[in-house]
Length: 114
Image (cartoon, rainbow, N blue to C red):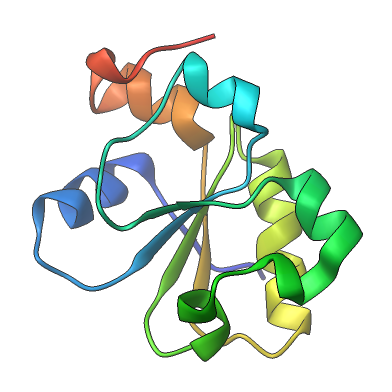
């Protein structure tokens, strides 16, 4: 079973001082419509991960020292990336169920929907 968190749990984490990486795997043009503004956000599109593999990830993600929460539009791409990272040996990686769409609808309407 793939580890997941809900968008409500993500909302609480974003309010905290907890160290983690919010890995957004959407394409860059999607960020124009909806984006979570947070210093822990890292954007690495799935297309880049597909072509470059683990080298597309930042050193912080590759270090595997802090939790990684993977985000996309609805949760499909992030589920794929979470499963792939788990296959790469990551132990502390979680899919965000429902993606940024659910986050905008349930947590922060200012985030934007598309």
